Length: 427
Image (tube, rainbow, N blue to C red; front, side, top):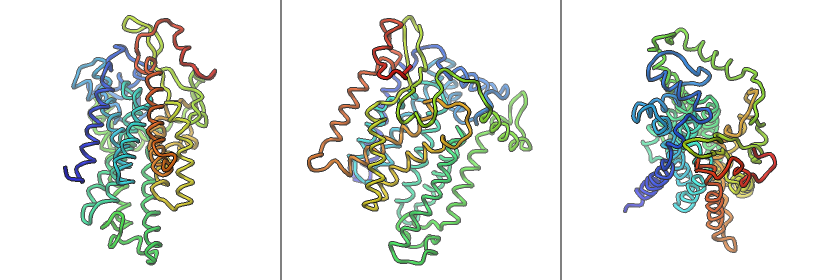
């Protein structure tokens, strides 16, 4: 097997394996779970083109749910099928990002394993919500940008455009992806600036597309313009079905005004909620959230949206270790691994939302396995060799332990959940 094909085959095998895991029992329960009560009716309305429903968010995630219903029927498999595909794509995206950063299979495979064992991807793979699609497109956008960065001369433009499309689709799922597009442009300029300094070229050279070690052939200003225009065009194209509603169809004249309506709905003050939590508490795993805990399909079942404690808490150490290694060793790879988490998390400290919930931490939780794999690659050497494998075993053990309340498995009683409640703040 040629070396250039090897990572693709490994990523594909990983994707098939995790997809099988996510699909097993995905139809249980056969009733709507948690926020599926909002997004499945919105997907049905899209299929019927009956009129606007759930206008708080753009359409992409609901279009994906509608595609599943069109493919498998209006049932629990149809509602959730493309969520499982998005989750598998996210795991493969973690592999791709680490491969593109380090050029080796080991950290890429370990990152994919950590992502799979991090509970959050598994839970979001099996529910018809928007966040799984948000994460999949964002991770794909980052991977495509790194792929363009490593492109041979003359091959960067298609990959760069692909990155813009992915970021546009991510923003078309939830607006919280928009900062990633801005940070992608900033990262492009920072890397070009560092390249110019390292080569002792005039700083103006960073604007040229010639003789560039990263993104060869992409002049800076046109590249940033294309990235933004492609993302914006993709975003607005995702509203196309709304122009064909039988009731209150969208028009070109109202398209921009509709964005203001969405903003107003997203920033409205909402009443307190039992499961609400503050953004600062999410990395500490203080307040996870039940998606389901009730009698369903003839048994007591639960689905707890929670991260793997080893990855959630260990990942924070990894982010700090990556930042330290980046500062001490001027290692851009470690800096990238850490900043992916920072970029995914910090917007929630800024955006004006009256209520927060733990599942908002889903995208940052996918960045933690990247930081962990990068940190282990940097520090797990000498006497610390194979600590990464030991950590993976620990994560697997915790996944087995928590599996009954991640998978909606039958529980022995309505008090069975107490077995897994480690902290008094856990529900």
